[in-house]
Amino acid sequence: MILHLSPADWLNLFLQFLSLSLLAVGGAITLVPDMHRYLVDQQAWLSDAQFNASVAIAQAAPGPNTLFIGLMGWNVGLNAAGGPSAGWHAGLLGLLGMTLTMAGMLLPSASLTWLATRWAYRNRELRAVRAFKLGMTPLVLGLLAATAWTLASAHSVPRTDWPLWLVSVLSCLLVWRTRIHLLWLLAAGALLGVLGFY
Image (tube, rainbow, N blue to C red; front, side, top):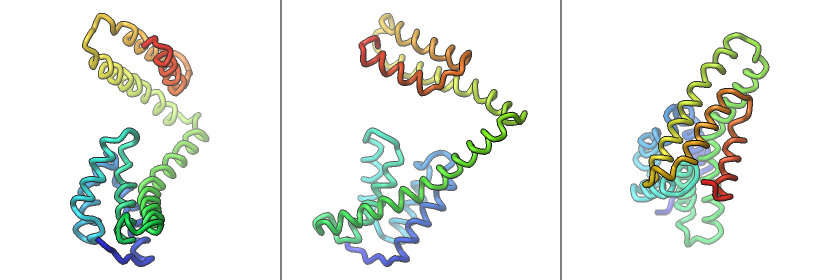
């Protein structure tokens, strides 16, 4: 598939993903139907096979599930160059497509998060902000407990799982009763795993 994309087409690709990012309430994967409508049905920049492969490869690969967006942009760029056999030109256009789709998808959410956390920090003494933070504690504890349950249930020998349950309960208590940041607990858990304690 060989495409002829103008600068306006590249801008439209970026703007499409920029607008889609504002709708990603359930995560980027919930926007796959509209991405398909735009990239395959409306613009014909990707084939059905390329679109499906982008989603499948990214979901099977380790890392964030938004990688499929970058793969779609990469494939649009490769198609604009005439395929992977077009040499370094294909690689450059693939990088351009990947950059535009990922930036379009991530810029609004990252900007909103940055602005919201700055506002919350400046207004941390407001009753509503304190109530929100206190209300998030049970949610974090519940998610931590659900993660522990999922990971511990994956083992086939329940009698040997007691170290995992102990680390999970201690982590919940530390999150609940102290101001230790959750990332420090994740790092400690990783270190225990590396050292063979589970």
